[in-house]
Length: 297
Ligand SMILES: C[S@@+](CC[C@H](N)C(=O)[O-])C[C@H]1O[C@@H](n2cnc3c(N)ncnc32)[C@H](O)[C@@H]1O
Figure: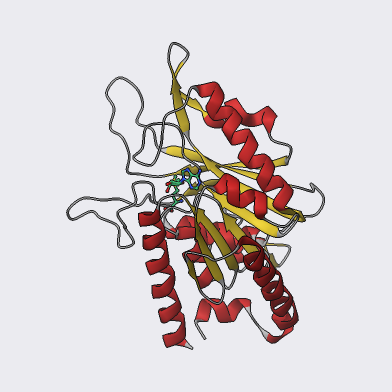
């Protein structure tokens, strides 16, 4: 078995995994015929609004997604800001309904220009009071590559908003995402090691490189999708915030990064994507990952 999956599927978790597989199969049965499907993933080609409405209530453990930012990317039709905010509030409400009582939403969101008001306003400022989930934390995703600037600072961050349904009970697998890069690992206090031997808390600022393109600097995982998540980012989210064999949803799947990370780390995943050519990229990635896992078994 693939080492990553093996670490997350020891015998004692087998019963949970069987139950989670049954939950996954029930969701897939409810959603109808997927564009692509494997043992642990299903990809649907369609509008996430239609598909989210079909999800059974409280069936999803974690939603991890990056919606369109309304900034004119190839896959977007620009809307007036108010319409965009309403659109976000509506799909997030559908996600909330589909989220398990101990579940969460990890929302990657950036900035948008508003004429006469802001060059780049954090989208989180616009939607904060429209979301009926508990905001547990804002994570800063900091990266090196990005837009060059002369009249303002080069933008080098986006946010991940970690929302939970129940502020007292939620998944947080800290040991699975500890940072082993500890400055003084052997430092002791009263004879006891001061640091956790696995590593330190990775904090709420994550330095993870963006997926880059261009000759000589293109990321290994690069696909033709213009806004692809880095796999390192997906893996940290899936390992840290989804239960061991839980069900993860990405309603704006794009190139399929969330599905790929879930397969690697033993989670079940459901993805929605409106553009068929992106579904094809996601399906190819999912199949390649499946082949890799089978080779390693
Ligand atoms: C920011 S990208 C997501 C990229 C993705 N995280 C990845 O790693 O490739 C947003 C995606 O949402 C898709 N999309 C836009 N509107 C949609 C809708 N109503 N339903 C489903 N997908 C939609 C776009 O085609 C685009 O691929």
